[in-house]
Image 1: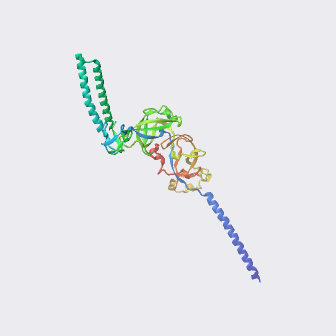
Image 2: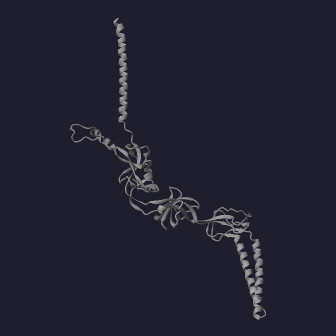
Length: 404
């Protein structure tokens, strides 16, 4: 009887103990997880940095231009005719005065021969009239008429010669010819374009700049020219500045001359232009990759030492001599390997002028600040970081900044 009564009690006690154990385990697990995430530190994010220092900086005005030959024309015919000869090939360098196109001029040549024969007769008639007038048997009017007829015939010959010359196109200057646009035997109407002739030894570039920069431009000012951002090394100088500002765009037209002895430029090319301005000292600049734009303004991330919590600080002299701290207990080599903890702070700045890959900072930074130039897309204010400058935009050649 007693055994029957004790068995349910024992089972009930076991069930209660099991339930209490499960509840206690869950509470312990939840607290352990909470404590783990509360004390867990995010791993330091690797970033590249640049140390802000006053430096000499040469600002530039950036512009987009179009390249053209300083001497370049589209040659066309003045008179109608049939193509008789094309004495050139594409991309051939032609000297000044060299023939480029010959139209059929057989009729003009025959007309000139006939006119020259009549001119001989006119000269003889004029000579006889003068002889008769000298002897007193000829009127003065006869001499005048014969002289006028002789001059008229000479003018007619000159006109026929000019028409025949128009059927021979010559190079007006030394240059490179393009692809012929005509064929042998083709009939050409006046104004038909024959070929392009370009002098590629010296080029010019036309570009526009904002009216605010007009006071910084002058004739003879140096420029740099290139076809890509990474290759702006062709030098030239400003030769003309338009005195009138376009009222529609508020832009000023500028023309510069560029030496093209290496043949890198071709007429019609798109070019990136940099107009050099006087060098300035004690200017704070950054790579443009360090600057982040937002709705609230432009800002950068500045690397600073992390603030130590009270329990993380080193023991003071008030500690008992016999009490050894955990810091002093660490081996010396482990202490040497430890690096100071670094965090980032969000600092709003005021950017100024931009030139190439650089931007001027007029407010918000001071010399000695360490600014993140790469890796800031995964940072938040207060995030832990570690500096790894293996690949740093601030160390590129085009940045124009000293390597830190």
